[in-house]
Length: 212
Image (cartoon, rainbow, N blue to C red; front, top):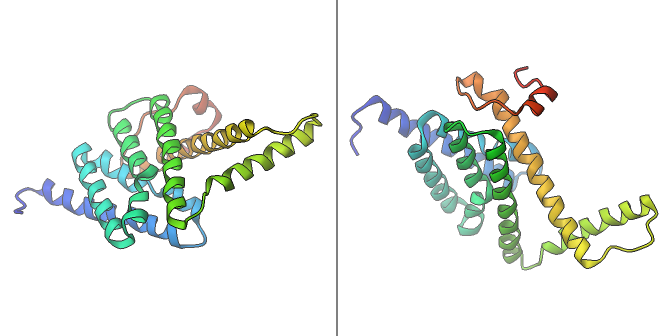
């Protein structure tokens, strides 16, 4: 392929650099025993930055390169898991902010992507380890419901349905916190790179001064 313009050269360089950086974060998240929360938080940021700097077509190319790189390095299951939800979520948030969509829109769909991605990861990892990981999640839900019932001295035990619903609620709540935190971090960090995303809703803007 012959490079004829400076823009093409910059696209190739930025795709390679940011896709590799995001892949490095994913490998570190998967194998390092520490720093998981921080790595999960910054994992989507390089691809979002690529989307905002170079547009949707370049972001798709970067996502494809990252997928191929992780597929080769980590194998078909572990390499593909980054898509659910981190890769797809990064593309979605980049697209929303590139198109200047509202936080309500990007956050709502982002939580849906994160929730479905969580379930897909549970299925894939259960297949990989040969055990049903959903049992661990329902046990955590049962423990929280028991503590809640004991705290209020309620005269009943949680049913199977309430345990399952509690587990789903915990997953959705976790994704709301995660996607909202990614919004906040990007809003605070990206202006330093001369990248802007839409302003937060008035409620959030009144609670936290993101500019500082």
